[in-house]
Length: 133
Image (cartoon, rainbow, N blue to C red):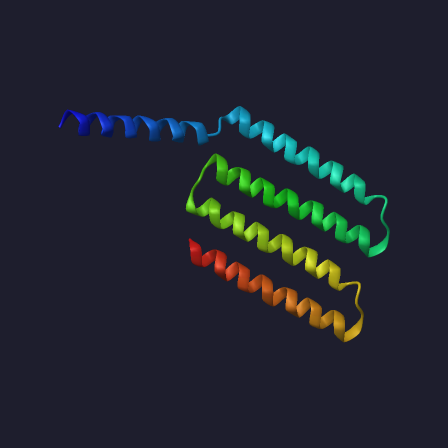
């Protein structure tokens, strides 16, 4: 009996310690947010060397990455089902914006089909994200 109680107490202490290790402090959250914003600014600055639609695609990729990273940070800071859904939605939105921008390299019907495919993929991803909540 004593051994079972000791084992139970040890497991509870270990799980509490593990949870404390994964929790993020406000200072860590703020530092991570600042790092994400700095990475976004650097990525956007790197796009300045590009021209035309390649520059637009690059900027969409930088913006999408920032939005996804911020959503993931919020989920890590406050791990809720709602924040998990927001991560999936941010990924879907970013992929859609990038795909739509890439479609602009095409012309005529090819561009229309490309954008329709991107929109359909986005709608499927959003529906899947909402289904998780």
